[in-house]
Image (cartoon, rainbow, N blue to C red; front, top):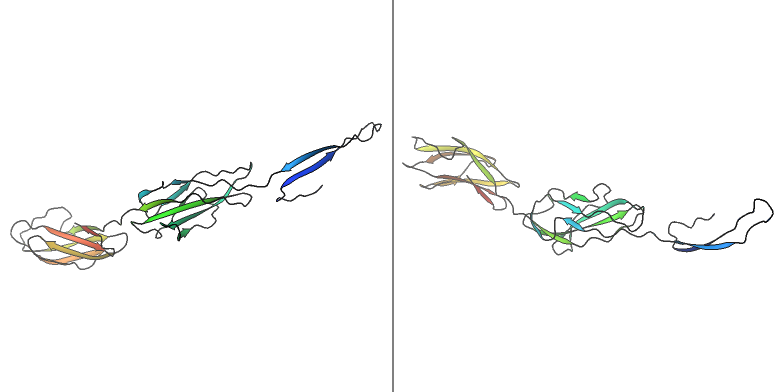
Length: 231
């Protein structure tokens, strides 16, 4: 016997002959034949399935999905994948999963890596059980959603949209939240007066002067990116 090695590529010529068990004829004449050994071939390039090319309004925590593993060699299986998110130009790597043997046909981009209102490109490649990698998939693009505004709520003296009082001044309290950070909370009265609340996540306003009749009080929260939400 002879071990040709896993990397052998080409043809082997073998010869065989039979022995006459009656011991009368001896060996038959040799019969040559050839066996062609094919080299291991890499997997087929994957396709980007989701998000679709040019998709918009994508969340900043995004699941990437590739096509199923395909390999021209019978018996080869899907061993690993490598995922990359690139800049819109496709030249800078924003995130690289490295060789991943767990998330082979889908992978979620970790929180904090993708910015809002930004266009990115992505690609993926597959590795077979023989250690060969496919080419990267064709780069496709997606755009993340706009940065959402802060959420501001009034909780005192009521959470209802209207409130009646006989007092000449009003105190307010409430909360404000944002995916980033609330930078400031302000109030204004359409009958006159405005100012800055005390606190941000939990805010208070004291001594708002009221005029006779309807007073429309608006509370506005602003985040560090300049987005505003009102109540």
